[in-house]
Length: 178
Length: 109
Image (cartoon, rainbow over all chains, first blue to last red; front, top):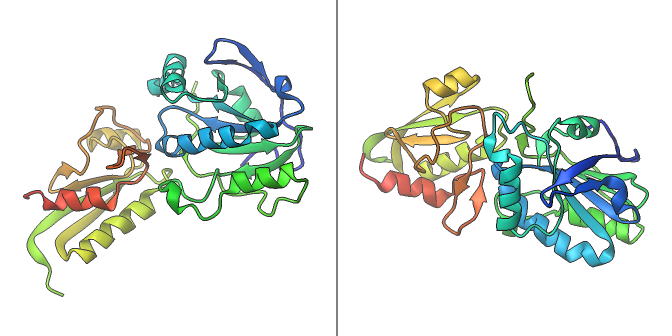
């Protein structure tokens, strides 16, 4: 279960991105930030990746910033190493920061449990939506409810989000055991 | 209903924490039903890394038809992970497609 609930403020973080630069949540103040706990190896992430890229492209001009964070244990899951993150970001032309949470502190502070798992914050860093990107991990054309897009549209127009919480669907976050 | 052909041996292996297994099993059963395939399906839940190694389980879900994986494995790492399927249209999915499942049964036992 997430450590933060709708209405709570985003825990701050500073993490290194695949551009080798430090990225802090505060760097994106005045934007609507979408933090997505993600990784390289998970097939759910890979199924949703193109949709994440499309959402960033569609909403960038309206002040929305996606930030993907990989917190997985790369010792047990080498596909999730920082070097492999750089390769994935380049291969897919990620249009958002892809950050490494090596000590898993950020994942723990958010209470993330799955990849992908979405936390949408408004410009005051208040959590407005938490859960899945949409209702169909397998077939993009069969999506009936685009939860994140609907939530973004509501936040951007100052309306109440009809579905503010959904169950995240994906691989478990790969925690270190020592 | 008369089932066609020699009885095929199917193993469906899954890890509970990977959420696609219900849908994958439903897809398998749908193909068997629609194509009248004579098959015995054994459902095996993998609960530990040791079981995964013993059964050479590369991820959930895994479907073996007469001992053959419906998608040739691309790794020899065994463990409790979700498996990626590379679909006919180039997409990656946690689920095998019906097309992939059907193709596995068209191969000779």
